[in-house]
Image (cartoon, rainbow, N blue to C red; front, top):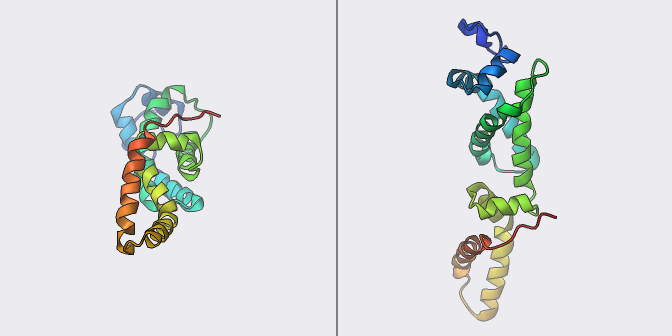
Length: 175
């Protein structure tokens, strides 16, 4: 499949993978950013999905990761240095890896920071990882106390609500 070039639309600047196009991006040209998104939208989605699968993360995170990639790209384009054909695409692909690495490592301080920011993807990941474990503990405690096991889900929900409230008070250790 051949990628569309900016020049295919009659633009004198040439291809997306050119210093001229990068200059337009750095000038925050809305048409250039729109064209970049249209051109690489499917490829970026495919790369993100592949990385999510490899990291064992839910595919539902793809839209959030992609939105974060485009937001971050717009902020960081000023420091981008064009070097070769494929450079812009490689740069966009590398942006998502950092975010996915954070989501994959629930023990990292960067993950705790996402929780503190009430990031729904981070909370969903944490809940999915520990829900069965906590349900088992909750059921065993309820049984030991003589309560109905039907309350285990309510207990778990209360636990997550409390955790979300308290996590904002935790200090992130940078070590």
